[in-house]
Amino acid sequence: MALLDSVTAVANTADSLEPAARATMAAVCELTGWPLGHLCVPAGPEQEFVSSGVWVGETEEFPVLREVTARTRFAVGTGIVGRVVATGEPVWSLDVTSDPDFVRARQGVELGVGAAFAFPIVAADGVAAVLEFFSRRVTPPDPPLLRVMASLGHHLGRVVDRQRAERAMEAGRLRLEQMIETSVEAFVAMDAAGRIVGWNAAAERMFRLPREQALGRSLAETIVPPRYRIAHREGLGRFLSTGQPKVLNQRFEITAWRSDGSEFPVELAIWPVHDDGDWMFNAFLHDITDRRHAEEALRLAYEREQSTVARLQELDQAKNDFIDTVSHELRTPLTTIAGYLEVLTGGDAGPVPDHQDRMLRTMTRNTVRLQDLVEDLLTVNTMGLNQPVMKPVRIPVREVVDRAVQTVEEIARGRGHILHVHADADAGPVNVDTDHIIRALRALLSNAIKFSEPGAPITVRASVTGGTVSIVVTDVGIGITAEELPRIFDRFYRTRMASDRAVQGAGLGLTIAKSIIEAHGGTLTATSTLGEGSAFTVTLPVGAAPG
Ligand code: ADP
Image (cartoon, rainbow, N blue to C red):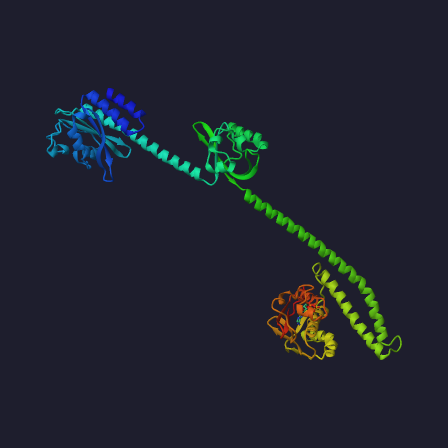
């Protein structure tokens, strides 16, 4: 009973095997009168047991035994130690000199030992150590003592289990601490009283405050901007009294504060832990100043862009209004001029001498040009706002082409061009707004004339494939560079060649032609080679009415 009591006390307080084993062996020696105790421990992967070097009792009295033991390895099942390990039970040898199991007595030396007994220290996963005791005299087994020893072995096993669990916990805690310490995110922990209890290296850098100074301080006064401190304390109080988290277990953005008064935005994740009846709050903080700057720069750029767009729209509107006003103002006087010119050239106002007639015709040509320009300007000005109204009629393709050609025939003849017109026999009727389509084709034809040398041939070819009519206007004129080609349909765009050669035009004809053709569900495209000529292709769906 005395033995059990003292060992139980040791087992409950010892935090490692060796002192527990020492105390146990001392108690056993004292209470049984056996002079020597020894602790064997496992060594190596083979599950062999060896001396731990820990001897208790009259150690000086047994030098030979100790020396032999020190160089003996007990494989499982070998010697009394090996048998204890193999069976997990106590073993008693009443006379080691005649016991074939006691291998240390088989080495031809006098050990000075009569009886021996050993018992295992049994941990959760098996025999963790063996305690053995020696007597000078031959002694018969003492079954009650063996039972007590077996029980002691189990008690001491708990010491081993506890030590292992503590080591595992400690290793886990160390790993966690290292992870937190080396984290690039700042880690800050606070207890229920609002004091800082955790502060890693990244927090030191973020708040420019060493850990020794941070620990124990009020968190609110260390990292929360003054204006939020009351809210912070209220939030903490609310959580502690109601258990209702408002900001816990989620990520959010918040303003952090340094003791020099500077503030910066952080992304924050807080999670509470209930530890020993008290709450603790852990948080990782990530400085998002750079992200905020980037967002801000993006927002400013967007706003600048928006205001530029608005300004451009304003300017565009002002320009449109101006063009509109001027064009309308020009329309009426031009009509008057054209009317009087017609009267004069028609001879209705009396005979006109030849040289004056030539002048009047030049004036008429230029008036018509001005009128065309005014109409083009008005058309282009309203194009984005309202689609031109189309009045489709069914008309043979050939007729549309011929009527368009007629509009430029006089100018073409004046410059010596030959106009070749081909139309496939089956290029049947189309549903188009004739005036508009003629206007579009006229723009292509007059370009072919304007941008060719006098006398150069110009071809118009109409054909049908599938449900599409194609009309191609080809010239062998100055051509267009590959870089400029994609832009010729832009309003007011003119190629360098056109400007350099001072060819008349405002850069509106193709814009208007394209919009008319697209309003019919068709397309207008161009191919060209600089110095060789150009081909403009109009496609129109057969029979489809313009939208
Ligand atoms: P413009 O009134 O200047 O002819 P357009 O819109 O009809 O305006 O044409 C735009 C520009 O495209 C022209 O200024 C010219 O540079 C180029 N272009 C159009 N048609 C031809 C062509 N057949 N050959 C060469 N360049 C052309």
